Image (cartoon, rainbow, N blue to C red; front, side, top):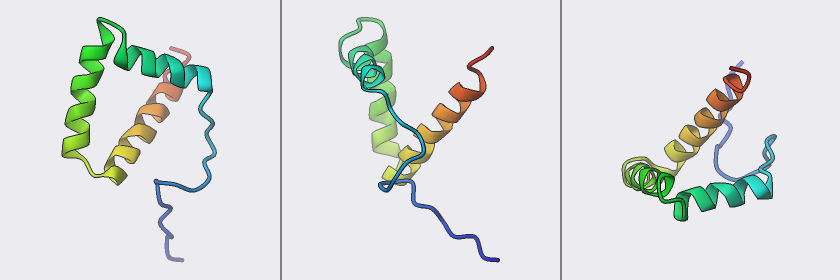
Length: 72
C-alpha cells in the first residue's frame, strides 16, 4: 500500500494551542530581556534557512520532544 503524504501546513490539527500559551510565547519572543534576543536570533535563521514545510516539521518535532520529556 502506498504511503500518502500528509501536508504539514494548513488543514485540521490534532493538537490544540492554548491562547494563553501562545500569548506567553509571544511575550517571551518579543518582550523578555533574556529570551527574546535568543529566540529572535534562532527564528531569523530558521526563517531564512528552511522552507515553510521544513519550518512546520521543525515545529512539530520540537513539540514532540517537549511532550516526550514532560515528565523528566
